[in-house]
Image (tube, rainbow, N blue to C red; front, side):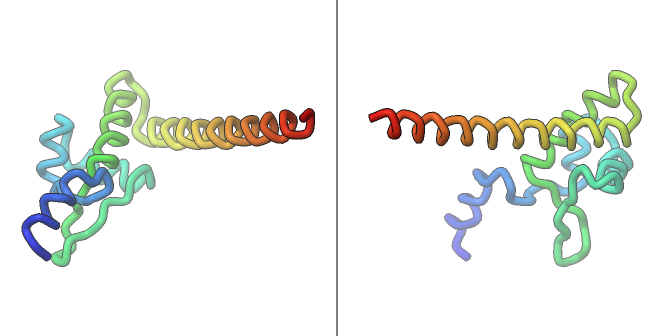
Length: 112
């Protein structure tokens, strides 16, 4: 791997670039919080060759949303469930929108 390849990964939202300590610092939380949302299966950090947790920017955004809910008084487990349900709802809305576009195109083509 060249240096250019390594730098290119920094633009990848899914690249596990952050250690647990760095991730906790960035979020203004503790490693215990990150372990708790991992235990609740909200995020699953990748592991380095040495077994250390590594987080991606995408996972940090999810963790930040969980922290926001917890900061407003929601228990960690409930915050994780809310985020999972929000994600499922967003995906269902995307699928429905795609279905409507397809159905609309088919209706328009049949009318011609």
